[in-house]
Length: 427
Image (tube, rainbow, N blue to C red; front, side):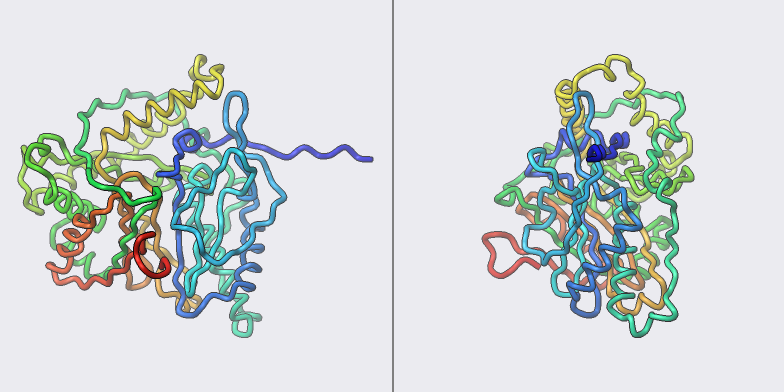
């Protein structure tokens, strides 16, 4: 009888190490990418497409385990199965008491959803997985059209490239202590019951937003960040305006280092504005953010941020500390960092699919579980999707944001998830 082969394992990438010890029911560290088709989803075709996608992303077939010193990923033989969506949006995926896969694929009417635990990958990796999944689904669903002339996807990274820990690959000993910043303004108010998040999504014509951004001499991301800051300012009590509004902005490090990693490879920058010391005119907020983005989005800054993720691996005390001590220290650090931020905004950018398949797709969207207010944006074709997630009951900030867009002459189509005490089935 042959001995049982032990499962392959690998360490978490450097960004992923913070997620297992800071995941809670209120913030499960789960994000979702969805593709809305122009026709109802066929579950059997989607299952076949998922099986093919797993051949492209074999490293995603894994579970998260606890070691004595670090968490690690262990390969699994479990086959991921497509299910109709029934759970609340971005429900917890990782359970330390159960060895389950770190992602799930669901469908609802015309939508294909991929929800992923952040320790497995970041937004870019998840988006590539969804693109491959949708690609194979449409080839299977419309086999009569594509059987002999299938379009080609623009994603061909090798298995090794996908599973690289690019933080380690591009780490140098360039070190610069982060600047100390004051605590930020924090949003307050009643929270949604059962630790759920409220999702409000606006679909706008991307060309109209780009044109308006160019009129202000800025980018789409900066324009939306400025609108978010101004919307937050409208809800601030005067006595709290002494604290700055600070937005966390995720940065895809693949834009600065040659990496095809399907794991985490991102960093975070912060941009701030003090409405007590500065004007609340949109033009002034945009000019300030333009300067912040120009200062922060440099190669030197990216190398310094990458170093911050990796340097603890070379700290001899941190390396020998047991996992329970590391968890405690990382939770404290995470809580201190959260005090420096008001909200977050993330722009995934333009999503592309082969032209032959694009005619079956209406839009893509993305949003995250969160214990604060967050905007996620992405565009596909003529549509820009702007998704708000928040644990707060109030929707006033979202209202101010979208009214600002309509005030610029930009039409907005708004949809929202329904909460437990609201009638109907979640959308």
